[in-house]
Length: 380
Image 1 (tube, rainbow, N blue to C red):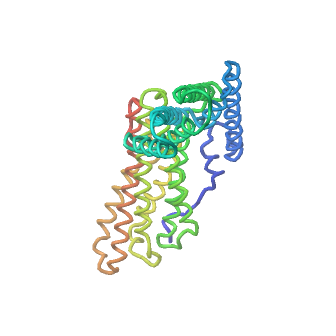
Image 2: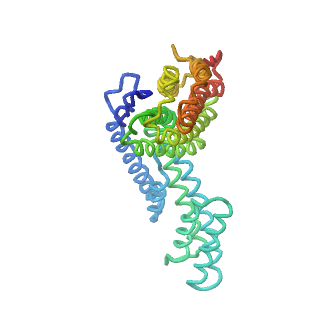
Image 3: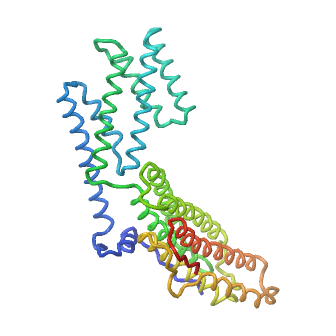
């Protein structure tokens, strides 16, 4: 007998679970296509505006502003700010080195030395994303044959890049504005559902046959963690959005990573447990805790989606489940001599990981509620 019936969700089903406001029928695929169209529209608008406005000011090389707008405009405001910062710093460093090294030496040696110094400086300053952009600017300043001084060419390039970035940030702010923190909130809600699917797949292999798509479930969870980590970095470039938003999002992301590590440990603990019988002695308490953990994952996802954490889940008390399981383990301890040491150790490892995951789920809700300043937090 298995602890729980494993059920895995497709991406479409995960999206439906999150859309509790009546828009569930839209589906994740339609939303992705809509976002793709929005991103394409914003990019085209920013590039066209940069080029057109530059022409109005008589800047015949205004296409560099359009290129900058295309490069820095990202899918959300926070990522756009981050890319803009990298672009500005890279351009300024590249312009300075390109002009300075054009004053002495001959090509290609001064050009090679300028590239080397700029990349090293960006690395030492922790600006690795700016190093390529610095190299591009150096190449333009030193290699493009134009009338006038290298100083004037460097100044024009910096100005055109600044101009393109200003247009891109303006478009990102005013046209279909998209905030990384809002996308991160929905991403974290989906992350807990994906972690739940991974959890169910793991338990299917405990005293049963492992889920056929367990490796896929693990990779889906890891991909979700990485995507949300990128959104978390982008959200730090945005206004906080209210009391505790930044702290709450960071805390939930950390809990997600810790729970994933615990799930991987649980996956290792249940290996070779198909024929184990000792865990049957811990029923129904062990199965009840596992089932309530599943409900806990879903409830935390719902809390994240609605950004309300202070209300405890109805008819669900994970600490009580843990206490009942510990009492059950104490009662059956005298039967240990009739079972192999390996399966006893596996059963103990499983229950330890289950308790750890249950407490992290409860803490994720309670600690986030405190971080965002909700009153009357219940720790049930």
